[in-house]
Image (cartoon, rainbow, N blue to C red; front, side):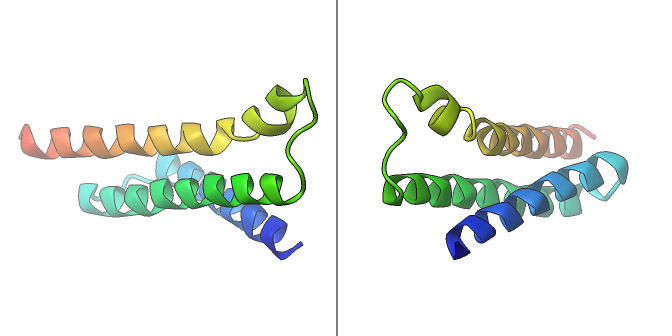
Length: 96
């Protein structure tokens, strides 16, 4: 139960910080730091989810897409969104 709650809290944080970063116009250094934290939390989310699904017994046969791969789509997309955001901020900063 504690592992599930930690995954849920990390997920809520990731969604909230991405919405906040999209709305608020911050200094490029702040965006880079928050994006690094966000990307690392997405990796932690994936690790905890994989650990929890392996501990509770792997996904049912034939249902791996809905029970394992589809829930991993959100943190993996958040990770790549943040990597893209970091690259864009670094490129914008050095192309002045």
